[in-house]
Length: 127
Image (cartoon, rainbow, N blue to C red; front, side, top):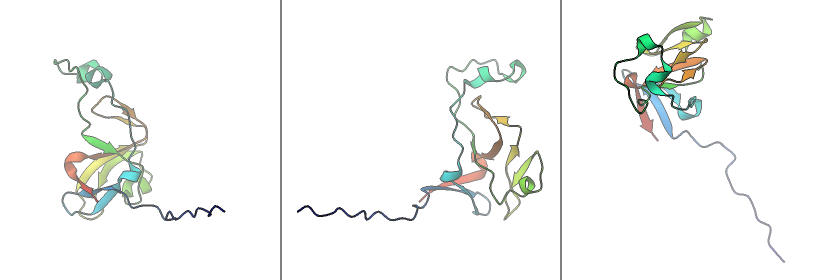
């Protein structure tokens, strides 16, 4: 007789592998499960001609921000604003901005709606 195979995988979800913290006060502001991924755009070709530089980059630049889903700590989102700055709930440092109508990443891709956190204002921590 064959023995029955038991499924012993845990039922709880694993913890996120990457979290993002405010650089100033170290408060957790996002985790990788809330990241909105996007394909890299065409770089400068994706911007209006007035916003382009004279250099023609062959490859789009690395994204300088991450885009996330709207989170509970985002007070101006809760207040019903269409677009505003995103401030850390702990220290009130500016972490980024949001706009329900969308915004363009520096790689050229349009994200709609956009909740942008600047990589220069947050630390990426691997667990």
